[in-house]
View 1 (cartoon, rainbow, N blue to C red):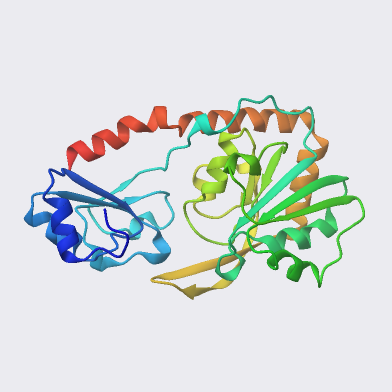
View 2: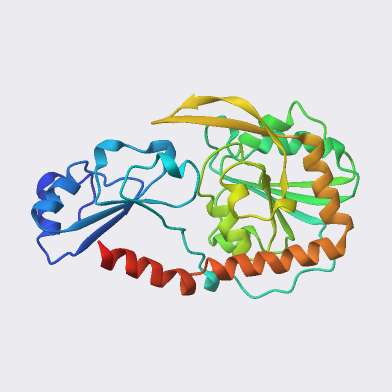
Length: 286
C-alpha cells in the first residue's frame, strides 16, 4: 500500500503479487498501469466518469455506470450499474403524504450540476405548504444563491451545511429527493435515495430518462455546454414544471404511495444482491 500517486515501480510491485484483475473507478492514478498489467498477464477494467474520460487509460474493458453517452465509450465496453447497498438504509414505511422534500448538493460541482438554483427558483411557483431540507458541504454556497431570491412563506426551508457521519442521515425523515440535475451520468445521491425508499424527481434528460419513471421527470432545456475532458451539455429544468411536480407529490397521496413502491423496486433491482453476479461474471470473462 502506498499513500501517494503510484509510480511505475509501485504498480509492478502490486501486479506481481498474484493479482488477476485490477478494477478502478474514474482513473488508474498511474496512466501506465494498464500497459504494465498486460506484461504481467493481469486484466484491467475502468469504471469511467464520462466527464473525465481519458482515452490514454487503455484498459482491457471500459465500464460505463450509466447509459449517458454510452455509444461514445470506446470498445470493448459494458454497461455496469453501481449497486445500491440496501443494508445501509433502515427499513421504513412511506408516510401517508409527501410534504418533506430533500435536496442533496454535497460539494458543489461546476455549473451548479445538481440544479440547486433551478430548484430555488421553482419554489416561487409551488402552491402547497412543504418542508425542504438542503444539504451542502460548502457553508457559503446556498446562502449566496438565496441572497438574490425570495422563498415563499409557505415553504419551510432548512439549509444544513458540513459533513454528516453517515450518508443515510441525509434521507432519514424525508419523503422525496428533488434533484433537477443539469448534467452528468452516475448519480450516487439518486441511488442512495432509492435505497432509502424515496422517489427521485430529476430532469427529463439522459441518463435519468433511461431508468427512472417518466412521471418523476420534469422537462429541461439546453443551456449550452462546457469542456471537461470531453464536451458536456448543460440543461436547466422548467421551473413551473418542477413546481407542479412538487405539488403533485405533496397533494396526491396515491401518486406518492405508488412512487414509493417503485423506488423500493428500483433499489432492489439495483442492489448488491442482484448485481453481484454481473460483476463476478464481468471479471471472470476478461
